[in-house]
Image (tube, rainbow, N blue to C red; front, side, top):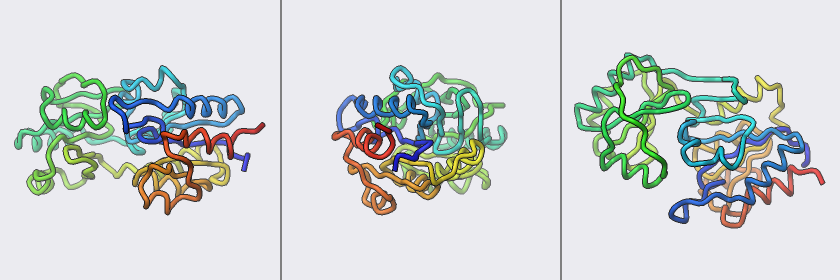
Amino acid sequence: MKDIDIVFVDIDCTLLNHSTRPPVYDFDSISALKEAQSQGVLVFLCTARPYHSVKRIGLFDLFQPDGMILANGGLALYGDKVLYETAMDPKDFEKFCEVALSVGANVEGIRRYDSFLILPPDKAVDALFETYPEDYPPVMDYHNQEVIGATLFAYKDLDDIIIPKIPKMLYYFRYHDYGVDTAATPHIKGDTIKIVLDKLNISKERAMAIGDDFADISMFEQVKYGVAMDNGRDEVKEAATHVTASISDHGVKKIIESHVLKK
């Protein structure tokens, strides 16, 4: 292969191993990505996490990506340059927060570089942050905020109550028993990868994406080389062009060494 100009790589269960508590990074795979960068390959993180979450989990202390696709495609950065960003109407966000408050649910507003809660952390926030460990954001007023999207912390039995009440233009996607992504438009990793490739004038024929979960399937649709982790879902492996080893066996390192690095 050896003709890759850009690699898009997921974080959770791809570079960050959640089979341990606390989760641990695959340092060997991160070193392989750094080596790819040294050979001129662009490396983009491509994650459901927003910017502040990636920062909080310490990944920037280990590795400086060339770019990032964040919030499942809601924001794309190339260095300090914003390549793409969605936005929720502040009035829609206020309405969404009011619906959440009416049933006692908390909301995290996701801004470009940080986030905030509208209430102090509760059991639902604790449950989600136990799955995706990080520091709690501060509590702030939700009025007149410019957000990329929002996380609703509410158990799934509240969906039938909340969904009919929220602004109809908002996209509502439950990804966890206590977590719902909400945005003005669906955040899809693959759609934003296409935007990044177009803006950087890189052909999909020279692009690779690596991931493990359902959201990563859309990445594979926009690149020639879609790589699934062996610890990933069966549906992801079926959609991939390649399957690498599990995160515990340094799967990212192995696919980078065998198919990207020039020796």
